Each structure stands twice: as C-alpha cells, then as structure tokens.
Image 1 (cartoon, one colour):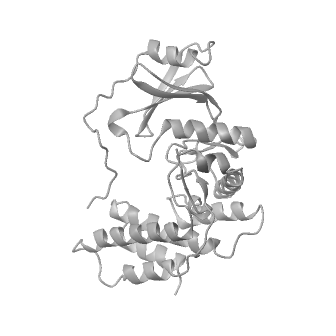
Image 2 (cartoon, one colour):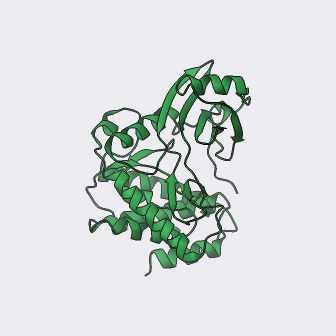
Image 3 (spheres, helix red, strand yellow):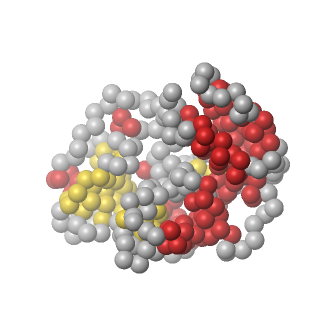
Length: 306
C-alpha cells in the first residue's frame, strides 16, 4: 500500500551544481563567501549547499518540485518574519534565478535536528514546548502582507477548513478501507465524523510552517535547548492549531500544544481543530505504510476518547 506525493516533472535533470556556480550564486548576495563545505539532500525536494560555517544556498530540485513547494514563498515569509519579530529562523540574504537555478541564500541555523539529537526526555519535552511557543509567535505576526502576497495558498475561514479536512479524511479513509487487510472493526468514517462535528463554523487563518517536525526543529547539542526552525517552503494558510503536529507521536504534539498555550489562553475551539488535524495526519501516515493498524487504533483512543 502506498499513498505518496506526486511530482509533475519526474524526468527533469537534477545535477549537483558545481562549486563555482554555488559560490557565484552566494557571492551575488554575500561577496565574502569562501567555499562550499558540504551538500545536504536529506530534505528530498531541495538540495542545500553549506557554505563556510554559517551560510546555506538552498536550491529547488526540478524533478522533486511540488505545487505546494516554493523557494520564493519561503524567502518572502522569512523576510516578513524578520521585519516583525526576532525569532530563531533563518535570515534571508538573497533569492533569485540564475542559469536555470532557483535558489535561496540564508543564514544557517546552528545545532542538530531534534530527530538526530540524543536528548533525555525532560530536555526533549522542553525543546518541543519551546517550539510550540515559537510557532505561536510566528502565528501572531501581522498577517496582512502574507495574506495578500498571492504566494501562500490555503483556507480563508472555517468553511474551507472544514471542507478540506473532510475531503482529506474521506479520501484517506477510502484508501485505507480498500485494503482487504484493514480491519472492519475500526470504524474510521464514524471517527472522522465525530472529529469533524466539533470544528468551528468560523475560524481565523494564519500562515503555517506546515511541517515543524523533528527534522526541521534544531537544538543546541550542548544546552539541549531549541536553536531554530527551518524549511518554510511548504507553508500554507489555515487554522493555527494545525501547525502543532510533530508527525511523530501524540505525546510530542501535546508538548508542542503545551508550549503554545503557555503564551496565553486559546479559543475554545482550538483543541477540536488540533485533534481533527492530528487524526488526518495519522491516517495519512497509515496510508503511506508508516503506521500499523494497532498504532492507529491506540492513537485514536487517546486522541478522541469515547
């Protein structure tokens, strides 16, 4: 069983850029750049060239281009955040297209991804709570320019939120239930109906990171504290509760929610949107083969107790 992203130009050339070209792109914005120190392809859709000790040149991989991914969008969002508030996110130094290459030059977040860090549980919990608080501060910036930019797709309110979540749940559940091995006793349509029934009729939207998971959340290996959040290329607009999703476990997402809540009370409908979003994510992970049936059943019983 597989339920994956599709890419419109899978046969497009995908060369690793020469060091000369990478330095040319970087030096157009930071003349002092000295050398390329490493190449990182762990992100899948992008290729990142590490320069010196503190800069990166991020390029879009043509065969891995998705409609929802955009370096131009990422550059715009990061620049807008920097104008509004000081947060641990990359600082944009330049964006452009040169010799057929779309690229983004920005500062490098220090530390290591939370996904690779060896942290004791209390330190991991603290980092996730700091991440939740950081996301809230991002959501609280002035949204006017982001909303009117034309670069960031998404929901305009409660009706579109409900329709999108309902459509996502319906198609994912249909995919899962088409598998003869999926247990009939786990009534996913009823679970989805229960989650959707609690969604708000009206909902304000903000620009979301989209995937603030452990691969994009960085921590300082010495202090075990949050050092930054990267990769805003999949950002979209919707209810802020949908950003509090680690895609790892309900416990991790709950820690993020705790940090988010630490900055002040939330609307009474916030938890309902959070739960519906987590349910959709969990079922999509199951459709991709990343969750076993037993794991899904336990997740649902914890997320939406009867």
